[in-house]
Image (cartoon, rainbow, N blue to C red; front, side, top):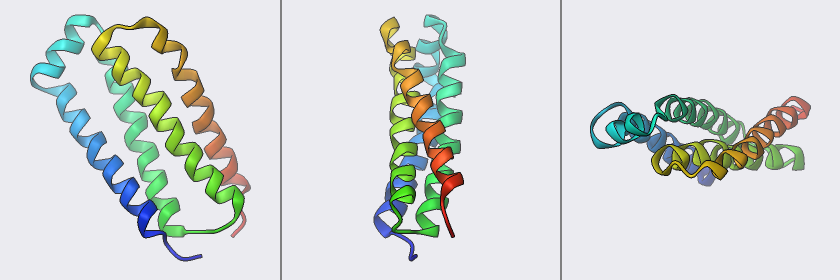
Length: 122
């Protein structure tokens, strides 16, 4: 059960992106755009879930593990971040309403990640 350098790097880059998107949504042009469109709360939710679950990915990557449940859980969290936060980011910037129907898929993937983490042995 050794740490995976590749998964650690992916998680670290996701953390970098989360902080950058959080800053973009708090200041300047991106902030002004999402405020004008009325989606600042959605942007903040996307950043919060993105950052929280990035920390989970980082912890799981450091813990390591080769069990199938561990691997599927890690990738479920990653997919959850992409679908949940990603759809909210894009919705906030574009106002494309149907993207809201993708967000729950990401939420389900995040829940699956938590379930599989709970079922993980060792």
